[in-house]
Length: 195
Image (cartoon, rainbow, N blue to C red):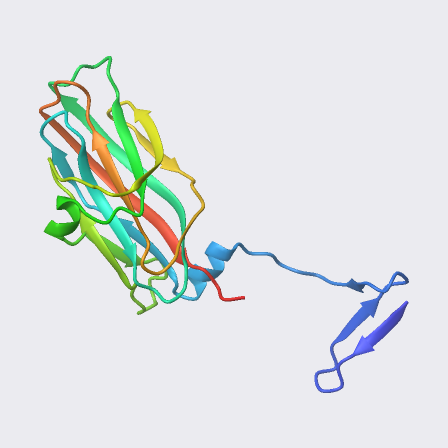
């Protein structure tokens, strides 16, 4: 065993017989590090009330960052349905790279785009729009579909990369006969480090 010493600081490292260093380390996730650096964000559509049972685009997110955005999870929160068939479910659709639709052309800013480091001042370069009953999302590829019961919350841990110019959209199709259902959709995301 040998010891290596830094002449400037006096700190040492031990070299084992198999030529490896003995270290004491602390590992943190990329997402936690991004939060520490002020590069992690919570995006939330805000409260939307869907007043029919048709598919409606509820949130659109397009990256304008020069580096990749990593989407850690998409959270869908559904209130109870009024008038909806209780034995039915709400259909969730997540679209990759939608480019048109009234959700996008209407361009109503989402309610929350918040840095998750509450002391940071950096803002996310993105177009994030909130939808409403009847808004459409078109020209995207279907990335994921799921069924949820009203009155539930689910986090889809999708582990997605969103390069500059790429987008993602989420739509909800409430229970048959729905006349009123409150909902929200959120993204937890961070800027990917440049390696």
